[in-house]
Image (cartoon, rainbow, N blue to C red; front, side, top):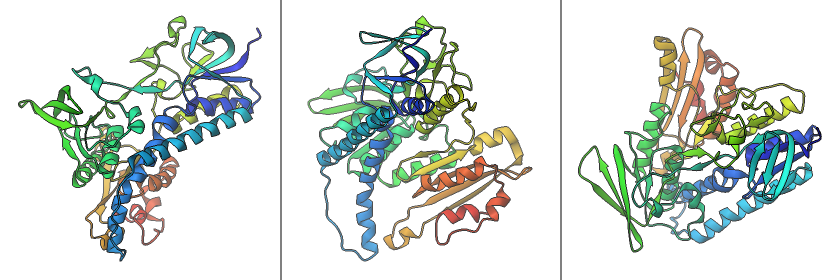
Length: 450
């Protein structure tokens, strides 16, 4: 049968675009559908604009640190509108780059919502398209609490379009997105209260990493309210009353001028895709795929945040390229989900790769040995600040293998990226010990811990 496309991709986020371009390199005729701007969550509503705001939030601290090094004190104020416009202009620039890349790869971009009619047919608007292979890469969306007044709250996507800077803000939940935004807004001068259900932020990460970040956030002035459940949001004029109960006590209230739901998680965007017209299976809304990103339909695949795998942009890109290499390039390979590094762009910053101490002890028991270091980096000595860096290696003593590495402190992401290569290659603690450190640096601590 003749199809319109060899591959049709639903969703032009990072994973979808990477897949489309790689398949086109192998000579496939590729089409891609997107109802929004090119680049998906990461470029438009996530990694890129968020990291730019992280940078912006660090300048007050840098101004203060400079005084200890002999620079005169600086009095400065944030032009919120200018910052937001600059961030969004950069996003627009990246949208154009993605369009040019797809054009250069001869991938046809079709604007609109795509829906599966059957296993080889997709409808985009009024246009009906056929394809031999179909890839679903529609990503996810932020979720909301089912409480009274939830319509008054914004989600993480809205943070990049606030017209004015909130003076006081509540962030609900303790995930990495909410914790990052709590630090961003605090650094920019907003008074931040973060309400979490558990005792600590960042559930699922290493305990020491969680503890260190939370302490650092508190030291920087963020009010973290733990063991609390939000019951309602009430609007009175231009302010909001966020009502909550902590540890089962009487209801308390925080009065703010903005409420964010940045940390309450994301769900796969799998509704209204026409999946009911296929045999594709879902697991709590996520598309179930095998190690080759294949669904229950042998010609339909899925990658990225809409699947039941790890929800990270580089993972979606690697999944998509592995699919294209296998199906169109004749180079069969799969995505490895072991030792995937990740970063948390809070202040202080954190990054991690491999097993947490808790995971390692559950798997290897008493054979696990932990090496830990906590110190004040040289940078802060003249600045006169008590900022701390924490580094941690989790080792299985029988094999001497380093199972995990965790860091909280400046440049954690840059440092852990290099450490991740060593752990991915099976480095032992002896290999770390035999490596000469770069002095003076914080990174050298990873090869000097005893």
